[in-house]
Length: 448
Figure 1: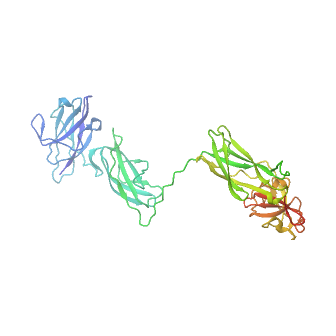
Figure 2: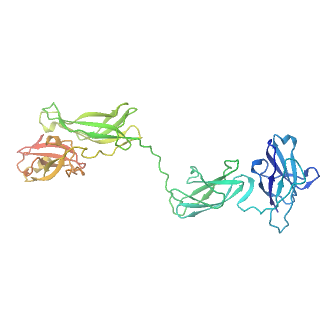
Figure 3: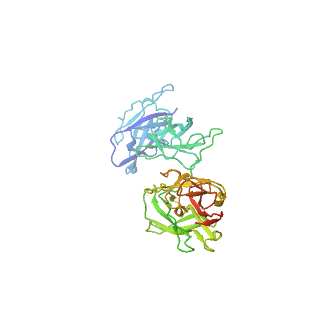
């Protein structure tokens, strides 16, 4: 049966870089005879010696080392007698030692143990995966056989047999355990290769397929998303009174500013950034487009949020506009910043009093709804409440959820809605004041 022997080269001339090994059956006194090339040892670097040569056919009595490289044309070779040929029941593997760079009958052989089963024939050939099993929910255990000369093994896995993990490097002793992400319950594909002295990587082994656990669902690979490098934030200013239409128009500044990804530090745009705002105009969905120019940090627009288009003071001729927020940014790497702290730092909130919320401002007329509950705003007058935010506490930790209803409001506590002559504001679910009217003594609604 085939056996193994260790070949140990002695002094080798610098011109000899590698050798070719043969298994031979005889010796004519000068050269080996009956020689056949040993498979896997056709070009072996001299730096790998001493080298365990495996798979030597039965009947071989000599090992011939033939020089390659610069001396190959001179047919430099040596015929080494193999001693200690194993009998049928013998287990020790004979070894041959090749001393010197010229033939000579003084080569000696030292018996060595048969190599461990984890080593197969061939200098740094591809390893073989014999089995893969699961361990818990995340680990797999890989059993394998390496080729001779192994220094390091490199395991890789895939969940789709296309995209492979980075290599997991370790020793040459089988088995090895590696961790699978997100879990090992689906089908897992495993392959490996090895490194040897002077050889970075062997070729890959055949791919071993570990079938999925019955009924298991493989966690999908997360969709790749753009890395957020900046964000933009919309800030609304205090509403002011317009100069036209009987001074009843309301104008509010809307400013969009560029920040870093944390939303804490203002940044300068290096290219034009288009930001789309959404809201309503006269009750219909509408958009506004802002562009932060390259070299700028922000852009703003003074938007008429309440505009009279008809007879002065005629509520039927009023057009209201409300901007709800940012809906789109031209660059996917720019997100929308979390809302700025509310109220803005350094702003003092003032107490206002309100009564029962109803679907219309005039619905309170004729009933004694007392105006005595408290909420808070950065405004200091009734007119400044429009397009501002309402809070439930003086420190502004929570906005007032107005549910889109109208609330009678006053600077003093104790008023009533029964006979009219009260102000009412419409507050949405985000605490924002969308409308402000004055209800007269006859119950009519008039622009404030």
